[in-house]
Amino acid sequence: GDATSRADGATMLSAMLDGSTDGEQALLLRKMAKRDTVTKLKALGELREALSAHGASWAAELMPHWVPHFVRLSGDGSWQVRESACAALGQLASLLGRQLAPHLRPLMAAWLCAKHDPHGGTAAAAAAAFGVAFPNPRKYADALLFCRDELARGLAERALSAPPAAASDKDEAAAAADAHARRVGSALRAASHLLAVAAESGEAPASGARAALEAALCGGEVWRLGSAASSFVRTGAYGWAGSVLSHSTALAAGTAAEMAGLLLGGLKESEPACHAALWEPLLLLLRDHGAAVSCSAAARHTLPRLVSLLEHGCHGAAPTVARALLPLVSLLPAPLFEPPASAALPP
Image: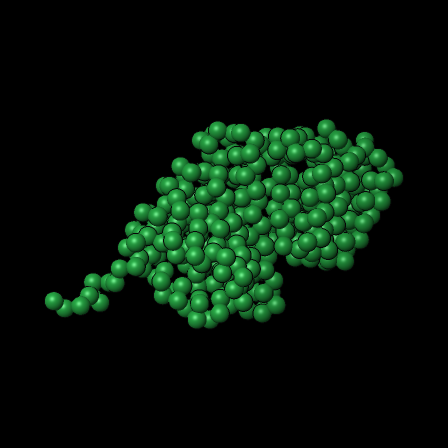
């Protein structure tokens, strides 16, 4: 927004006045702060050329000023800008090596979200940059866990960000809605990934990244994202529920009733991609927390929604539903099959 642009401009001006950037760096940063997509793309291309020409020492001087620009550019409305920013980050990581470490904490949330961007090229460029910076899984996991507190805060801020205000211009409204969905959905996927990495690293369930994520992203608000208009957000919410169920048993037990509202509500989905994300966490929830599910407010709608799903041919998701249907029926709590009291036959 305008406030962010002003802040970036102030940072750039401050850097110029204290001599911490040279003229070429300052000009590139100024171009990258523009609103125009063509100007930003051209500046990112020029940045990559400059990095090739000037090498590691120049990159090290630029890096503190590049970080806030990357955070903003990685969320740009243009996928070309997002992809190009991630490619530039990969080049910087290659030049800097261990000198990247002091910048990881302010950088990591935006970088991990970019790795889960809905645009494949952007996600691939961000993943490639991670591969350059951390060439083996152990170093990658260590880097994520090193930034766990900043990641938990940053991902929660993104995942729970308020929807954009209504705009009179339809194109502006659509662009704002798309940006918000991308911001929320990528953060949910990044959080799921971080929780899995923490569990696989052997970190204790109630400590470190797992505890930070649980505190930040397991309130009732996140489980209400099943009502989001964007399928990218809804699938992200189902994936987050699945990650909690798989990697944090104690937390899942405490939030099972709220989680049931999200996952049982997913039975009314009409998009195949949503069903692909829904069924594994739903079956995990029913298998491990059936009693909590049967007590949830969403439970009474389960059979009607299931019948409607089958009547509509599973909305194109028949292969996914067919594989899960028998396990689902076997796991549904018995009280769900009992007729409501109003339907009981008179004596």
